[in-house]
Image (tube, rainbow, N blue to C red; front, side, top):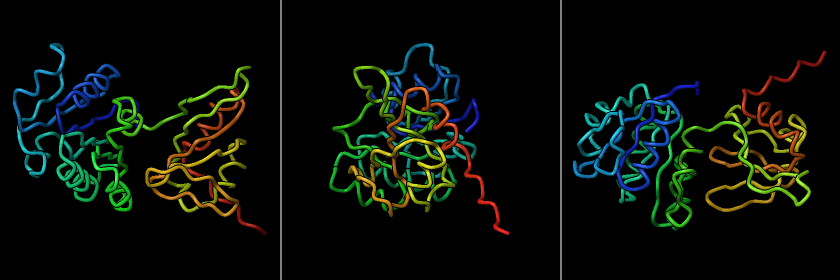
Length: 228
């Protein structure tokens, strides 16, 4: 995504309002949908985004939000069904690139992940996590060793790497992939592990190498040179 994007949010609860405010402060355009007009009171007084009063499963309401030119969609209403159905509409009907849905029932999360919709369970939920999903870029450091030399970071990986072995990513970026999160569970990679759609990648590397690694993995993969 470019430096400025349009993001549509379904649900103006505490998380939705916080996310909308954060995105706007980062310079992005925001539309937020809620069927309860009073919910928009949670937004800050200086919010300049588009407030859409209506049911987020209706195509006309989604179109009013500007979803046709949105780069990201976050479904954070208080209903699992509404969130997943609207997220699928955003992905499959309107072709939104980055889609994420809030899920209360952790047991259903894997099902939705298999439909290609990244999910976040309520017990793990923060507005920062959603921000990370709708604006994927760079590396987010999660842990540093006491000397400050090594860091464990979540790194955004361009979709062009999907289907390639994690060892290929390690070789290209010069880092060690510590684990991936797949269908909501951590997976320790083997030499045969292949990157799948929806995987979140966590790398271990010297602090000074993370920026370059994030740049390499975050851009389209260079095609292999043809052998003579």
